[in-house]
Amino acid sequence: MKIIAPHPYAKPALLHVNISHENLHNFSPVRIQFPLHRPLQPIKLKPPQKKSNTKPIITSTSDILHLMDSLKLPIPSDIYTSLIKECTELGDPLKAIELHDHMRKSGIRLNITLRNRLLLMYVSCECSGHARQLFDEMLQRDFNSWAVMIAGCIENGEHSEAIDLFIKMLRDKGFENVGDNQMGFSVSGILVCVLKACICTMDFELGMQVHGWLWKMGYSRNVVLSSFLINFYGKLKCFEGAQSVFEQARSRNTVVWTSRIVNFCSDDNFDGVVSVFKEMGREGVVKNRYTFSTVLKACGKTRDIVFGRQVHANVMKLGLESDGFVQCALVDLYGKCGFLSDATKMFEIGKSKQNSACCNAMLKNFIQHGFCIEAIKILYDMKVARLIPCESVFNEVRLMCGSNVLENKMDGKCL
Image (cartoon, rainbow, N blue to C red; front, side, top):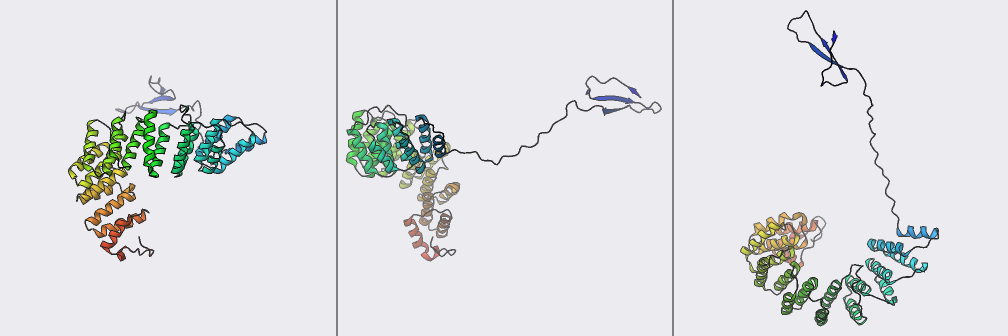
């Protein structure tokens, strides 16, 4: 046995030994490798980390107030501002009342910014009574003060109160210093609230006066206000006024065009809907789901399956076929035009996202074509999904199939 030098590319940890058998012919030498040393540094395996079951400790507003009181430390206004913001986001009325009471007892000077934030906190926490009391106590009010109260009234359905506040704001010159927009309110947003209140209270005369005031103040060409004014005049059935607003709009975006299309549809001017839709395409305006659903509805009313399929193709290109509004309009279109298989296909595509409107549309299709069993299956599916069928459609199913068929044998109650 003889030791030979290691190969230049061999591993340094191995010794190469050549064993030859001199008495054996035609036998190739055997090369054996032996490990001759341990690793210089032992390998250390890290134990698996144990998942901690401890939950993060959440400090509430009350905890901070009690801590500061126990340490007898005064709370600065910036800390109060952070706590108000937290209560506003949480929407907890008890925490909101506790925080405001603590601020009163502390003797901190409440400037108009802090008072406005307190107003927003109370409105967000649905404490309309406390918000109105604080608002009445304010000796100084700015645009944000009025805006919070008007928006809160609209949110709570108090439309007449919102209109009264708006009129008082104009008398109080509340639109001064509207550039102070640190709370996220804008003039256009509040005016939309006022116009919405005019629609809900059917006070169209006041709404037209608001429009005149907007024109005087230079807000009439705002895009948001323009679209809502078109809707306002559409509800009023004053389509000339809506057209005038559309022509005067500085920027005609998707919402403005769609508002115009909705007005034509509500006036049963379905040819006008198609005309405006084509004009919208020539102008290169992007269409949204409300645009397509309204146009598809018009195609269903006129039984225009040819143009309806063209609109459907545009819908597929934009990937809006699974949208709830568009899907419902497609189901209604194909059903009214007699293409029940296409209506069923569209209904099945969005089955996981179905709503009452879409199910009622498919239910009408089955009734129209005399498919009683399929209509009853839709009713059972709606019951499982806790969707409410339209009363008129449900009565049609009962007349066609018989009320005894709709009796649920499982619990003895009607669907």
